[in-house]
Image (tube, rainbow, N blue to C red; front, side, top):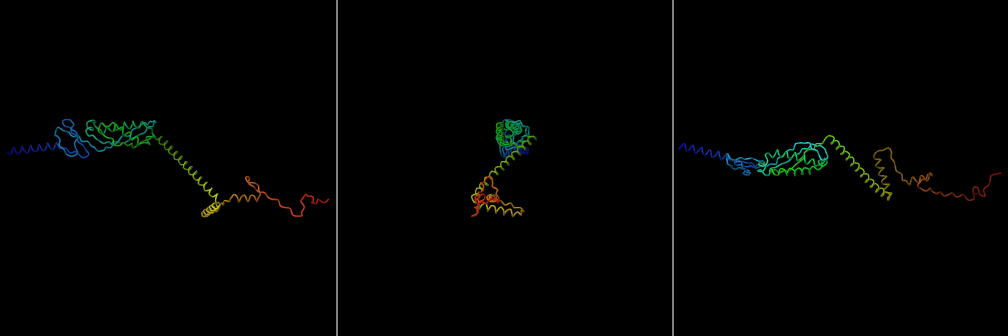
Length: 284
């Protein structure tokens, strides 16, 4: 009886060991691809499940999004400019069975595919497009990678070009171009400001010409502002009409104005005209 009891205990222990060896636990972010006698039986998980011991194998596949860096490489653009470009791609496994069966190591393969696709896409665009239309180029990279990784059960979520390294000569040329562009914009803005200011000044002059009192008030206001600055010299504007009066008095006539007519003075009554019949000649 003792031997039978020992054998029963040993049998129970062996059964427990077999059951324990067949128990698998898969995390929430994982899936376990089950192989029995080398044949795929699909994906299991998440959670705990039992598989046939000794004849089965579990391959765990991570379903989390993984960032795959794309190493920096020299790429020639469409306009024959050599740039150093690096990027990062975000992949996620959507079919665990295909990612295990159809590709040996999808992570390394995705890196190589991303490098070749990056070189191909960049070569189709010019440098200005690469610098100014980066979002569109990222979308083209995503579509190109999706077409190649879809059969692996891997989905491309996002592709981002991180850095574009330009040659030193190109950087200096772009800096000069940017400086010239800023100067052009500054001159245009200054010219527009001058034009608007001249228009406003013309309108103000027209309004003041209609109302002489407004001109006098403006003159007084200007004198008040000048006196507040403690200047020793004040230039007072004199109307042109007043200058014409002074010129007419002094006998200086402006070239664009008619000469003033002065009436001759009448001779006194009873006085003979000079050189007339009543004039007395010289004494003989």
